[in-house]
Image 1: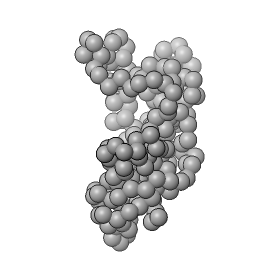
Image 2: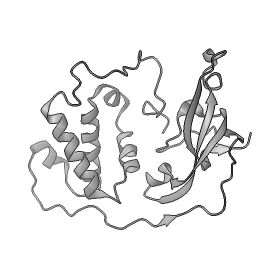
Image 3: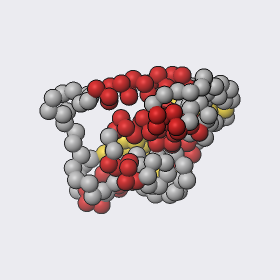
Amino acid sequence: MDGVHDLGGREGFGPVRWQLDDDHQPFHEDWEARAWALFLVFMRYGYPAWTLDWCRHVKERIGPIDYLSHNYFDLWTQTAMAITIEDGVADLDEFVQGQARFKPKGPPSQQPAIRSAEGAPAFAIGETVRVKHLLPDDHTRRPGYTRGRGGIVEDCIGLRPLADASARGEIRDEYLYSVAFDGSELWPEAVGRRDRIFVDLWESYLETP
């Protein structure tokens, strides 16, 4: 999805705070710990119908203003609410009133068929590749800043479920690669620097230059 939710982030919001918070605590209000615990139970309860990639896709449907301004744990709570309402496990009035009125039907239980890639990897270690310049309509794990950029295959990690397909309810294994990019290839202002950035990318994201 080409929006504020892009895996690579968006410019113009100031420096990224990478340090731990001053109090070194993961939660700053009691409700945050409870909300996160409930979400982890929710994920366990709903798998395999509610995969992490599907949850990420639903989270990316939150409007840009709310997505950028709401608390991290609030966003995941909204995600769980949206999924349970869409799948008929709960309804909006129950969340508004804070009280369940009926016995949940439970999540879809059908295990999606797993499709595996056939044949050997398409790209060899040391090969030059380019990230396809596509604008996806739904969830993807391809950072926007890599689109159209060239790099070198450093490693073939092996077959892994393609996140884009998993978000659509389809479990499809595809070869995953670690691709190295020169910093100047991704950001022109990095010319002359020795930085290299390693990004894990699935085979369908890549092409031969």
